[in-house]
Amino acid sequence: MWSQSRYLLNSIVYFEVISMPLGPVMLDIEGLTLSPADRKLLQMPSVGGVILFSRNFQSINQVRNLIDEIRSLRNPALLIAVDHEGGRVQRFKDGFTRIPTMRDIGRQYDQNPNTGLEFAELAGWIIASELRSIGVDLSFGPCVDLDWGMSEVIGDRSFHRDPTIVSELATKFAYGLRSAGMMAVAKHFPGHGAVVADSHLLLPIDRRGYEMILDDMRPFESMVNTNIVSGIMLAHIIYSEIDDKPAGFSQYWVKHELRSRLNYEGTVFCDDLSMKATKKYGSMIDRAKLSLDAGCDMILICNDRPAAREAINFLEKEQISQSHKLTKLKASKFISWANLEKNSRRIDIINKLNTIEK
Image (cartoon, rainbow, N blue to C red; front, side):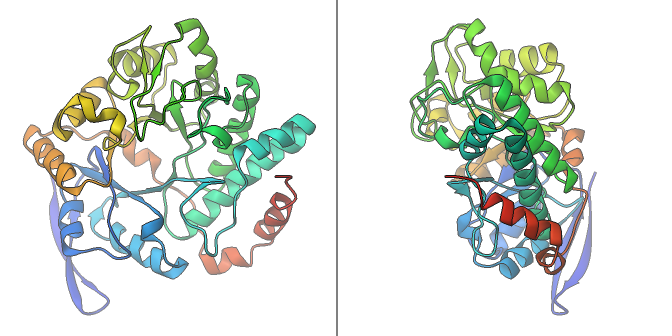
């Protein structure tokens, strides 16, 4: 059920606010402001969120206004997400704290575990505090893939090779996020670190047996057991000894491993369905259906608006049920950017993070 209300925007333009549950699709947008086509698409019942990229960011004021407009379209407001892990994966830069790589934090742990754990928590806090001040709900992180020394696309995004150390650091990072009001989304289950191919460009195949992959799953399991993770994103990788489908299309990985063995009850995200790793699985409609049938709660479709529209139109006809889990990802705390800039804790954390050896 949904309803519409008309509101005045900037005292000039009327716009529609639609009351409806969050749908299972997260989309991107093209520019610095919403186009009429964006507004129409984001009000479709199958849409539940927006992921922002560097192209959507010009300044803090601009992106905050953009997010305010997105949030004003729906009730409850659409989820707003961004990849803001630190290092080379940080979409917003000008005015934001430059976050060190997770590998740098892992190296601090090797020198002094307590210092490494402190830095992990501080990084989580600063990321969440700054993103929350402009209205972002989620940063897709931490990346808990193990650093097997094989994957360039993961590389320094990983904390460490040792699953116990990754578990400890990721948990502290997640506590930092939560203390600033943001939920953690761990990725890329069951592990992306042991393949060379980049799933943005190719379909990687991990030929290891189950016993070896258990190591990669240990950080996810640890975070689930401590109830510190609210979202898990799946890898577009085939683990050929276990299943012939990529994890994001696999009932085995979602329903057997995540839901049953790990007893995970949070949101399951399927990574971007426009990545080339998914191309062989048919149209965007086919891929969306495979992912949702596997048990994913939310699918990302980016950088292909015609295909996204096709999938959304299909899901409208299918009347795919919305997941109640999505609303639990909404961020809770908020501090204005003006107040955050003067916040003594933020200033102290920035100074500490700047001491990390690169």
